[in-house]
Image (cartoon, rainbow, N blue to C red; front, side, top):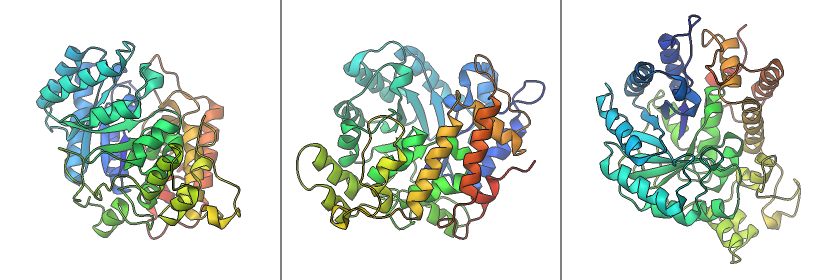
Length: 410
């Protein structure tokens, strides 16, 4: 499932443009997104007044209920008591969220045991299931796969937004044997195609404001619980029902089932990669024969600009090792990763807002201090990445809304 962490659009007078926010929410859900996140980092919650945050959450919640989509609200606080108070306040919203996206305590660096204790207290007191937002570049607190498994075992913890900037042994260990009922959502847009191949259930992706349908199709083609490598899964189900989410049997604990296949302990590729990373067998050839998709074989390429990654041989290498020339899914993964890199070239969400404004979808490209508007070069790079997606053939199928929306309307 793809969740879009919505920007907060601003009007010419600097106020929150609620009508534009509502329309944007309708658009991305119509293009196949399975859920929306209000007041995530992309929504600039730190720059909003209390009444503005409540207004944003009310609008997004209402649209989610109209579409039958999952509604998540972001919560961040360094202290456990303050985070618990923010969670309790969710019950005052007109629409109670399906989940809260809760950041690992930033700045305090309490250690793994402290993080587990923090989330144990929040899960016990909170009114909704929790998604752990693991983003160590912002929080300063790394978490091992073992710590994430400990969090997964807590009642009330439904999953993790996984945004660690690299694919390393800890990533492979986690995704190679997914905890039952625990949803792993890609949170680093550039690496998302590779994480789909390793078994991630989907993603919370700011770049899915643009090319939403392509992100949904790519996630559905992955090897993880949200896709079967054939293009089925959430996006196919939504298309068959005119855009409505399809209930599934394997939703994360406590969160309504919206188009999820049952977790199977990680993808075939992820399980094989876990064996290889730990020095066991089977190795790469097994990963291919047991269900590693072409997208999985290209995981290294999709992530190649961002630190330690999985690598594969050049196209045309020995088929016995599970390598083949890139197919449409691989090409799409490359282009979406390039789009994400362009959109994050400057602090998020400045470039995304610039593009949405150029498309006529929001009234201004404005952000609030300390963020600054996107520079011309970054904006033009993002337009170039969108042009590359618009010309990509092979996975568009009958759904034309996504490719149509990547073109400028100016």
